[in-house]
Amino acid sequence: MGKKLIISLFTVIWTISLVTVVLAGGEGNARKGKYTYRNLYKACHERGGVESPKPALSPDGKTRAQWKRIFDNKQFDEFGCKEEWAKLAEQDLLDIHAYMYEHAADSPTPAKCK
Image (cartoon, rainbow, N blue to C red; front, side, top):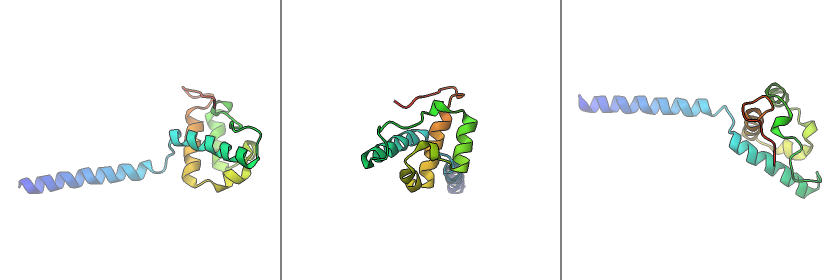
């Protein structure tokens, strides 16, 4: 009886952990997004694509709805650095979107790129 209970409990915990990991995979990581966004502009600056390694837009430059629209439609023209944006993986885009969304002008914690 004791072994069956332990195995059942372990199975339930394992299943919950697996479901949590799968569900969390669809969202971006804002911390990684900030790092990726800054590195994108550093690479673009080193290539000579922009004059400054500082990102073109700060998260507080737009509202959450505007950021969502930009990333849903993948309209990154105003950012510049087209080559670098084209090379980004889907997860990197999700991470950058999470960073922009969490720190947008109408968010509880707006942030500027420094």
